[in-house]
Length: 394
Ligand code: HEC
Ligand code: HEC
Ligand code: HEC
Ligand code: HEC
Image (cartoon, rainbow, N blue to C red; front, side, top):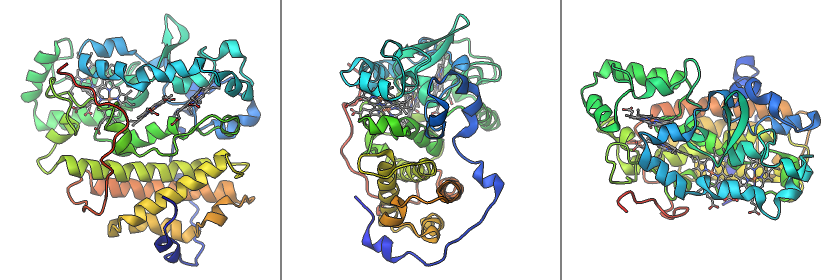
């Protein structure tokens, strides 16, 4: 779906400029320093590069085998998914050499920890003091690196007596946890960078950090980007592993999230996720657009311009009054297909600012709708899902 006529008509004529340094700092930059040193990509490419391949700090990655000791079913679901197999196999695909060459990466180094390819097709990890890479995108690629000093691993299932118990024992302790302890535990996890099912915007942005593929040279060389990414469709198929509180059933809705409030339902969750996905796509596409050097056909620039249109179109189509502040930002910048595609000297400032303003409004919107129970059925979700849902009963 492209920009709807309705949206085009609603554009206003003001070009709205608010410059605040704090707003411009919002975004994906929190991990920039920690992994920057391991990119082999030349300096000239650093601009588009700085959105990619910084998903995890390898020094803090624990590795999925530790998670598996308690999360065996989640692990089985992961193993059967593209992230557990296909993602890594892609690096020996016939086209891999062309993509690597476009970035100046020697073909025999594609699967090495120093190659940017492995940041999205693998999980960088420090093992025995040396930087290495685990095949595929595992738990910590999506939920955040867990270890290191102050990491969330040791807190996330500590109900007051530590975590040295079996899953069954821990879930019993969970039933007796006080509301205060729970609130403090969840806050500590979030502060330590854990992305839980509750953190819908953070989860959605994280998927897109890999799935937009924000490196111009890579897209120019024919590397695909996930143009059709819609988070409900893409997370409810092969990715789904909602088995925590009922280990025999892969539920449509994360069981912990559902247990968090009696206002919550599967429909509400889907609507919330759908909107979080579109808001995240809008913000990240604007952010990538800020550093674009071409909007020719089949370029990354063209891709993100289309994504901006798509996201705005999808948000407008919901006719949700509560999204007005986000639509206002777009209106004030007068985004049209032509204006989005025209390169100007002001792009960096303009699109960074738009991204920051969208991020701020998106955070407020999601905070108002954390339970998803006040979202109307004008937020329409496609029933189709990507891939086969894992069945723990088999
Ligand atoms: C000793 C057992 C144990 C280990 C090991 C363990 N977990 Fe957990 N995990 C739990 C329990 C229990 C919960 C339920 C937490 C709660 O009540 O909020 C949980 C919850 C989670 C959640 C769901 C949070 C939410 O609200 O959506 C994620 C994600 C998670 N763990 C990831 C991991 C990852 C990644 C690892 C490995 C780095 C790991 N866990 C290792 C026991 C464990
Ligand atoms: C591709 C990203 C991705 C990977 C890889 C991933 N998860 Fe998740 N995880 C998610 C998403 C998204 C949700 C929320 C699902 C939803 O909204 O339906 C989730 C939910 C969870 C939950 C909460 C489920 C519930 O019932 O409440 C746990 C626990 C969890 N993940 C653990 C893990 C573990 C352990 C691994 C590694 C074996 C892992 N995840 C790998 C994205 C991922
Ligand atoms: C660390 C990078 C990374 C993250 C984070 C990530 N993915 Fe992926 N994903 C990949 C790669 C690489 C592939 C394999 C590409 C292929 O199939 O060619 C993939 C494949 C998929 C597929 C299968 C696509 C297909 O064509 O069959 C789905 C569905 C998917 N991802 C959904 C998600 C969702 C939902 C999230 C967030 C919850 C997510 N991914 C987060 C890198 C990532
Ligand atoms: C920013 C994350 C990211 C980086 C960096 C990245 N990839 Fe990918 N790659 C993906 C995703 C996501 C897909 C799946 C896109 C889709 O089909 O939806 C993919 C798909 C592929 C495919 C499948 C191509 C096809 O036509 O189906 C190959 C091959 C591949 N990548 C190789 C590489 C190589 C080699 C590198 C390094 C030179 C690399 N990738 C760097 C995320 C990335």
